[in-house]
Image (tube, rainbow, N blue to C red; front, side, top):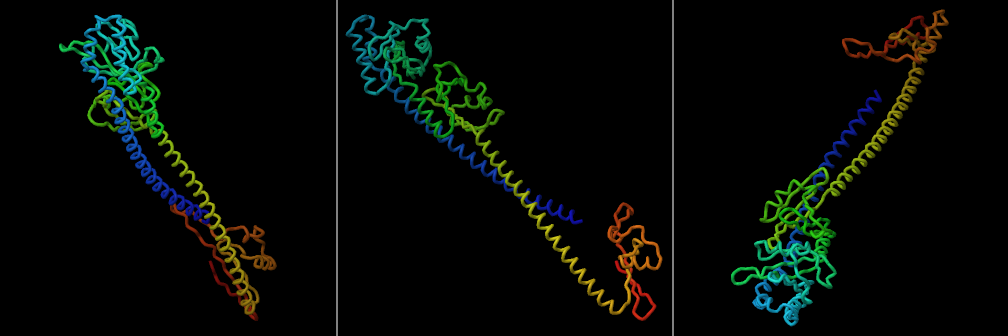
Length: 425
């Protein structure tokens, strides 16, 4: 019975602690998750907004300058009379000074002019080369002429003398005559590493990945990659590949999307940059954050398990000590009671004998010795009262019924031959 009480007590305490932990942890986990999600959304949107405006500023100026050059009548006059001055050093120097003036004034890494008639490629130091068709290095020129756009952006290596073959972002603008025929291509260029440094700065500061991709999803520029290194489609094998149509299918406003896959989970913000014809995509991977939340939950579970063990040990120890104390007090009180009872009865009666009627045996050694002195055979057990239970159970109709021990106490009053008995349980 004592063990059952202790077991029930420990079980109830465990249930209360576990329920409290589950409720508290669930509320805490959901609350933290909600806070983190809002923080991620806010950071990602602000990052996208910041990069968008800076990129728009970076590209707007060179695009406008290139368009201004493309509509410059001086430049058109130069191209119209180019064939008459082939090999003329003064003519080439004039073109060089024109291009170098723009380079010095605006601080660009490259300023160039390519003629449709002669295929000559001029830059800020003069004539560089002739753009031969079929040369892989000149594909950009012929591809742009086939496009029906006023300007385009090309990421390529700068082959002119002194440029060190650096990867450069070129703004190509079409020069047309009064009839709309293409006369040449003019533009400026700046090193791509400055743009990559911008993306890397945001990536390091806010823990995101930033990409500029074309309308097919090919990465033009990222913090560690450029289109010049080869074609690489962002949506091939990435965690948010299934969002490709949603992201590339919208040019209006901003797309804010949560994603989850076997690889990872996170938040994506995409925005179309009209001037470039590219999409700015910000990917905020939340896999590590989710792992931290799970680890925190595991730590809380560990603390609760340790707490439960300590509580159980404490409760078990307290209850056992309490029971032991109760037993000691009960035994002490019983001994005192028996001593007082014995002292009182001995003054009235000569002898007192106790019988355990339930188990059909003497209830004390004195009673057993008395019957032996009268010649009665001893009980089969030497000390039955020391080993037999005070009660027993019998099976009845499927239920346990406890039968208490019944004890009969007999005594012989002084100066009389009568024997008086009383029954107790």
